[in-house]
Amino acid sequence: MCGIVGYVGQGQRSAVDVLIEGLHRLEYRGYDSAGLGVHENGFISIRKKVGRVAELERLVGEQPVRGTVGIGHTRWATHGGISDVNSHPHVGGDGAVVVVHNGVIENYSTLRERLQALGYHFKSTTDTEVIAHLVAHHLDEQSRLITHPVDNDTLLAAVQHALKSLKGTFGLGVLFRDHPNLLIAARFGSPLVVGVGKNEHFLASDASPLAGYTDQVVYLSDHELALLTPGSMELIHRDYGRTAPSITVLDQSTGDSDLGIYPHYMLKEIYEQPTTIENALRGRLDEEAATSVFGGLNVDVQDLRRVDRIVLTACGTSWHAGLVGEYLIEELARIPVEVEYASEFRYRNPPLTDRTMVFAITQSGETADTLAAMRESQRMGHPTLAICNVVGSTIAREADGGIYLHAGPEVGVASTKAFTSQVTVLMLLALYLGRMRHISHNAGGKIISQLRKIPEIIQQTLRCDEQVRMIAEKYHKISNCLYMGRGYNFPVALEGALKLKEISYVHAEGYPAAEMKHGPIALVDEATPSVFIIPHGTMYPKVMSNLEEVKARRGPVIAIACEDDDRIAQIADDVIYIPNVEEYLQPLVTVVPLQLLAYHIALLRGCNVDRPRNLAKSVTVE
Ligand code: AGP
Image (cartoon, rainbow, N blue to C red; front, top):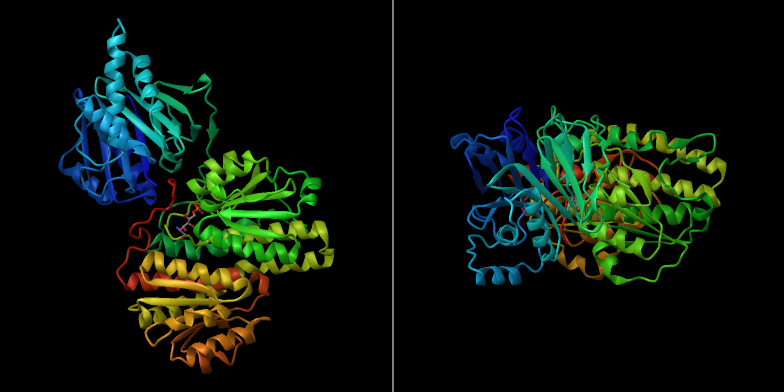
């Protein structure tokens, strides 16, 4: 939920340049405020303020800081309001310790009272400042216990003692005023990665800030600390002591995360979908065997054959993709599927058997609730796989196996290409499981040929953009909106509603269309449009009846319908036409106009489509 960067060098680079660039790349994790602390002339100079990283950059331009060791932070507020004083870094003791933190300390108020009783004065209302004073306190204590000058081991011991008091999650970067060449990192529950350079080391919440500096990284594990100096890196695990670093070489070609010709990342990522769906399919369609192929499931075929129940656990848009997956797997493989909100699954303790398989679906691979749900499933002994986009993310690394989306960096907070890639992967999984059971070679072959056409069909669908923009002009001042769909398009109705509400702040709800009669139709009036997803298919007549019920109550209707539908225009107020595809493939197509509708309405309302208020791209706190 926040982004951390750190740098220790010997003068080959300006710490401020590395920190600012890194914070720009992590801004998707939170953008309420930003700050940095850099060793300069025997002190740690701090610059921090409310607003985007660009504001911090301006501040640093006006009040320069020069040094080669520093830490930076971009914040999504958890404890303590959005203010300059609550921005990170936070200072401990008399300035001896400076900390940046990603996570939530649950027992911070008790610790705060204890530290105040010891004479520590707090400036902020954050949980992070507690950590800074706690480290300073233990450093004072450690300093009194030793007869030699304070060294790295003394500083390490101070941090270790402080961490023992913390309940909650943290990814930490810690600097010490009197030890300018040392940066200590600590991880529990919030991701941290170390970048290994030549006489320089980097620290970040994920690998994106490291691109261009190094491709050698070490992902810290929970309870692991790193002592970083320009020329050295030491890893210490709480339980196992000093551990050898496991270096991962990053694939630097993980898709470009620059805007290119687009005004916003969200629009770029919507337009990338023909390519990203192609990437999700690449190498995974076996025409000869008429089935899907996965490289990393890591599950024995016989075990897969025995599976008699599947749980898909996720949050937000990924949960909506899971709902599509439920319809797909149950139809194509006839295996009962349950889709669980990760935040519920982790505490609900559902009755699962040894023939239950659990999949965690996540774009970022860092969502705290999804990670916890996966760990809970693994604790119960279930093979737990991940459908994930970010290579090397915590969930991807801890899962027992999985399937990558290969969608490239998704920077826009509103998930778009990840959704269609997740649905594509779930279609491949349904085909794979179905062909193990009763889908014939011929039927499997047909599914493969239909899947191969999808990227081109999405390309055609994107032609509706201008039409959608004009419709958005007509409706952008609304306060409420309903989304209706049935069958495979019910989850798409939920997803369309989420897109609209999270970037335009318009209240929107998605329902199975037939549910209208059971309450929501009371919301229908001339000022509340209903978006009906009504492509051809078995449900068309039923959805049409629901649509007419809304029209009978003077509710405006925006229809997402097939190009060859010659009836809809007489009934709906506005129609967005899409290509016709098999019902089970419709979510990949019907979602695109809804993504564009949310995008254009948000723009017309003057909202920040890539960085909507109150949100962050990766929810790494509970
Ligand atoms: C979707 O537009 C939202 N940004 C949010 O619901 C997101 O899907 C959710 O937080 C799950 O994230 P994940 O896929 O990275 O786990």
